[in-house]
Length: 233
Image 1 (cartoon, rainbow, N blue to C red):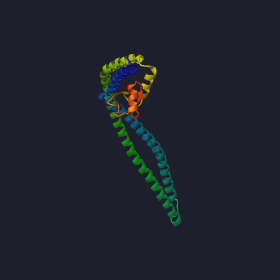
Image 2 (spheres, rainbow, N blue to C red):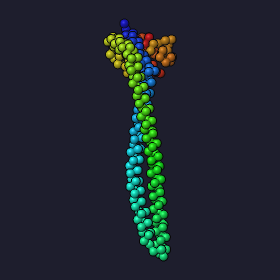
Image 3 (tube, rainbow, N blue to C red):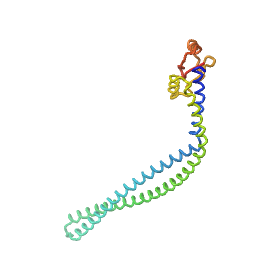
Image 4 (cartoon, rainbow, N blue to C red):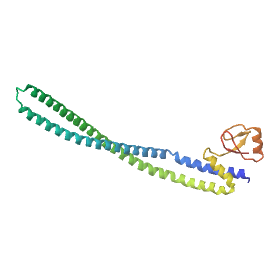
């Protein structure tokens, strides 16, 4: 068997193995499994984001509650001072009224924000419960899909191992330099080797010039200028 024919025979078995590997990767069950995994990861990310939001909300709420307590104390102190003012001192009374009005507005602002935050906290709790339920259901589905995929792919993986072994056994029949070039080309295009058919590269159907055809027919290894494959007769 010539070097090129040995290479072609090896490629035939090598590509068969790749075909089986692709069938395993493209299995509908595997694709469902990957989508289920991605869904779970997304829910975990969402859960963390909600927890961070709740944590930030709790910190802000604590600050607001302290500010609210100070505002209540301030308003109580203003009321006490108001009761001690001379009613005839109009300027002092008016100033005190304005200060009390500002204190009430500040108090109402804190109360409104706290009320809004309590509403947000309730919404976050509801979202957390929903995400937990969705994640739990997705995990059950994922576990079942994983079992289904393992059972389904077991036979295919055994077939793949056997085919890889057949291809591996043929490597020694190919010259090392030729095999190295085959592997290098395979990283970019598959299959790496094409036949010369009707003056064309069978890989990309490009017509070849007469000088190139002459080289191929004389047993010279030529790479297609269009697709980069090795062309053999």
